[in-house]
Image (cartoon, rainbow, N blue to C red; front, side, top):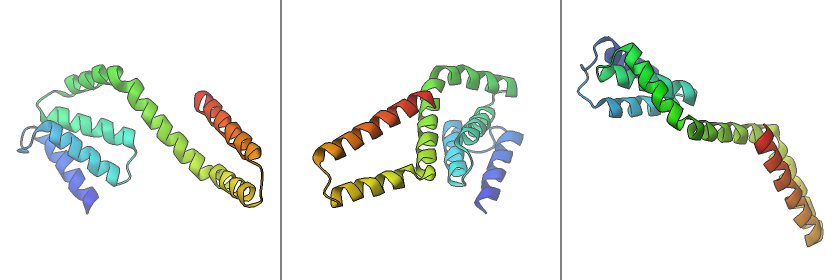
Length: 136
């Protein structure tokens, strides 16, 4: 049902620009949130909602693409950095490495390991994570 509503709103905004009595920015943000809640990939939701908002504001398709490209170039590095950090966190969570680390730490703490052992284990984890974040 939510997918159908999102599709209808997008279609109305694209077929009859200016027909919806809402600010184009509010429309684009609302659509982006709806698409993300519907589990659509963030990059696709961002681009699609920006296109719908731009066309609803009265821009032509070429002007909309040009505006998105101009503004994407300015903020793409920051945005893509956050996207990559999120993807890295998901990959790390699904890999099982965090479970292995938690079990080893719990075993070391409950097994009576020295503070020095735990300190070096944490230190090596942070070094490994920093190397992976720069090279992956």
